[in-house]
Image (cartoon, rainbow, N blue to C red; front, side, top):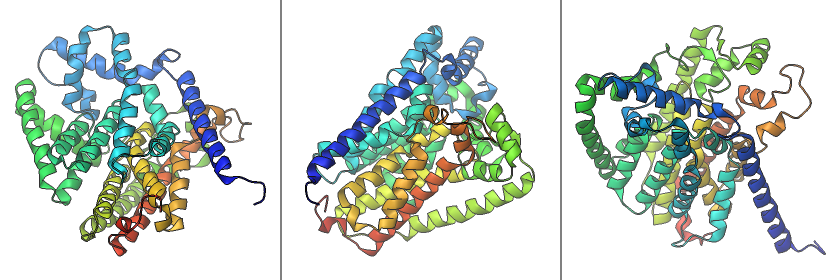
Length: 441
């Protein structure tokens, strides 16, 4: 078009996106941090307090609420219980600003087909990360899921470097800060990647040797094995009961909200309390059927994988499989909080960077699904700004809460899965596809 210099416009667009990303992060850090809202540290306080009481009582059973956390988390907090709690908060809050840049760098190095990734790759991944609302919520809440995400990114980098035993160790550590990343261990068993599995098993052996003297064999059986099964299959605990909450961005949580009428939705958005699900048995059966279908689809993809010619194509296919595995957390688990989607950050960066290098080789629908998925999950307009819009007749000015109640983040997860499946099918049908093109081609 006459008079328009596209390179200059592209540079301006990049600058605008970077500027928005910086403002987005700054706004979030200003509105939600440990200094302006003490309630941001409530979850950490609960575990810290339980650990302090456990330590004071000597060895014995862990506190009742330990159903959410494996023993390793309590052992890490054990030596900190002699500190003032505000110092413990600082220890969990400020290192995040080091952890997440390291995680992004490791992700880019793991995904990039280049020996030395380009600066634009780091910038692209940084923009995806900075505007990712689950990241911003994790920062505000200084939750252990942030450390789990770092460990997952380190594991991907170790896998890229063929340090497979180390990959197993890192996966094991992530799963023992909170149970959900353990699904990656299942993936490596399904793929029969025995060197990674060996790293997991050796870590488990060392872990048991350390823990059995502390908790005893029965305690280990309870905390390491029974609790995860309880959270997956029982319906008697917070988050697993047939209750609706905007926080639970999972398949089960979404179906539960389907069964709650508009009036109850407005009540929940105002009070943020749990809402009992009408016809809970029907909702449970529907969720179970859909879980079985999705699990069967996942296993079909994993086991159907054929040998692919070309190193780059093989690696990208493995990254897609790992991304699908992370997505399965939110299809299988009964309930996950909104910030748990930080565990999907590696999947979004993986798909985004593959499109950055090889976008034209994949269907346009896959790219469309990806960007819509990112927009829904990332919630690129801060919730605090959404709530300044004129009030709605049903939920008032709680627009960000209504956004969650209507399951938009979960639908983003589903669209990300569809994008991955389309790309994965393309690679399966065209072995060596990525190795025949230069990056960016």
